[in-house]
Length: 436
Ligand SMILES: *Cc1c(COP(=O)(O)O)cnc(C)c1O
Image (cartoon, rainbow, N blue to C red; front, side, top):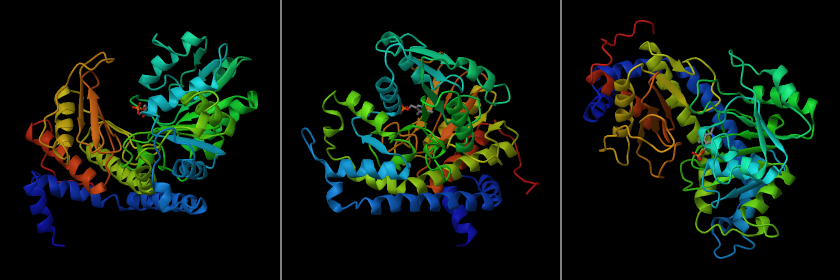
């Protein structure tokens, strides 16, 4: 297609020819990255199709049950498909698991008993887990049930503090929780390889420890999952990567049979376990979402790599940087002033197919110590595999960006952020990119 048609289309969507040309130059410089990301998604696509075929997914599996949900063929088959994708003995995949935090809380509360100790050898866990564990006192936390918590921070260079991890493991240590994604912190995301190294170190000290990985945002970014590297349990949200943008709710746990049975009995009730839990009308979206997930994750990765390279080239600190390999879909860009964070979020919002006419504003969200701005125009409310961004309005004024069901949408979103930053005079540049 003639470039001028494309330029005209973008111009009608509010992208100036200069911003468009600059974006094209950056995009075209990343061809080898796109090939690498496509190869990972091709491999994972095959993994998902093979698991579906092996388990004889049929049209009947797409129908849901109501009431108690006994003999739910689709639910039981889907759980076997997940177990095969993650190469685990078993899995629990349910619409009754309301979100990622719930899935993680379920895994912890069902596999720990009073008197046990939980260890995080990778520093502070995701914010919402602080209340689950009781780091911040909270009703119903693990702490209230007499489950203690220890934490060993990462070293300054992001490495594991093996010496102190060894010291922290004792006769009470029952479960180790390892967060793969950086979440909203500055520490690096852990590759499956590094997670595997950590797990084998821990298992050498105490083989019976349950190694759990918070897999949120990490699924399908690599050709292996933490469960291929020794994790006993991997846990995540269906409104992130594995739901492929279609799952309207849900969470999953995949791992050792024993761990999954414990979780099922906690999710429903002792004695009932996994036998109940009607899937209602969620199954078709769960299957189709999982089918699309490798490709959707690749699109989100491309959007993140594009953002990293654009803003790195413009001189802003970005994490991961433009060249690094990826182990999750999150991209941080530090603007150093509130106006940058706000303009970026406005750009993402105005690229959205839903609520694209809305202007996001910082507000005092419960649980945060500063105003937070969030941009999301999603088909599934709060879904962060869809193009979204948010940032706390406090130093260093960084924005966290993730998702993009299609790379075309991700690309448009990033161009829109750049257009906003230029229009507001936050970026002053003539856009002749010399180093390409
Ligand atoms: C999103 C996320 C969670 C929590 O998931 P919610 O669905 O928001 O409850 C936990 N851990 C990490 C690393 C996450 O990215």
